[in-house]
Amino acid sequence: MKYLKNVSTLKYLAEKCVGCGKCTEVCPQGVFELQDKKAMITDRDLCIECGACKNNCEYGAIQVDDGVGCAAAVVYGMLTGKEPQCGCSDDDSKGCCE
Image (cartoon, rainbow, N blue to C red):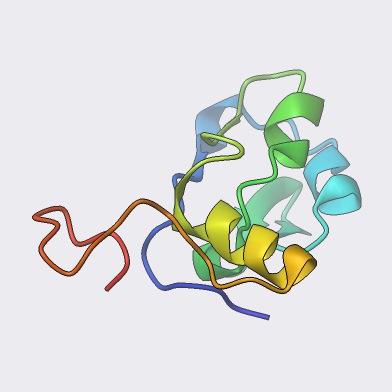
């Protein structure tokens, strides 16, 4: 399930990846896969910013602001049955919920 396009804070630093595959094991959304002994992002828009990948990468190859942003708001809304609230408004100049 995709949430919102182009809002994830996920960053992957290939030069730090050793190909351990831990990110592929812990990501609940299947954002990572191993190719040629390195992790690769399959689709950044699948990321829900839970932080499992970052918290389990011993090599610092993954950065994500876990628990923030619109993706977290959408997940929280799904879990609670409420409309997502990510702090954006129609006149927000950042446009984070477009």
